[in-house]
Length: 193
Image (tube, rainbow, N blue to C red; front, side, top):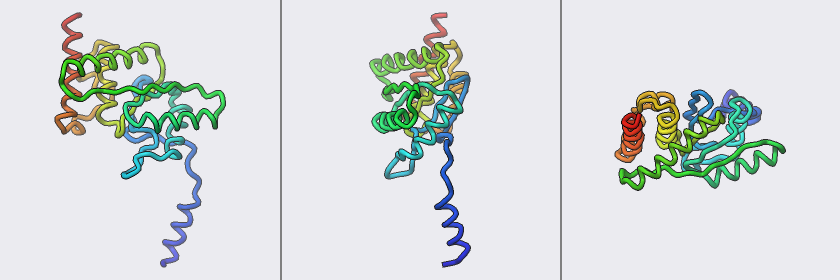
């Protein structure tokens, strides 16, 4: 094997891992942050505890995040937070497991409105929080958009901007259904004002 490749591999293998790192698809606006599940890894695993520890350290130490809202991988993130608390006695971090519903039914819309209101309460309480789904591009963006709409009575477009949304990520019918709930919520709030 080429000596240059061997030395590069050796350096890479023995380089210390960073103490903290930013999660994938990370976006922050006024203490409300969103992104991918902590410890996001490629298929078939989707989760790395060590990577998750570095990302949680970033959120806790650099972003002052004290609440994690999981829309996916709740069991994995629970294990991660338990380990984080064990390694950092006295660390104060709350974990909320929630769902966002994709279908356009009234029942699912009503459930999503409750989630939007819960996210708005976190913003109102001035709590730095992190909301994630698997990729941090669809469900987390939609829930955070709805939270900003509820909290600040802003338009859908402004809520989407604050949530770090990218319209190019919303391609499937299910993704559009999610956004439709946030749009409908913005219209409904505008009518009541």
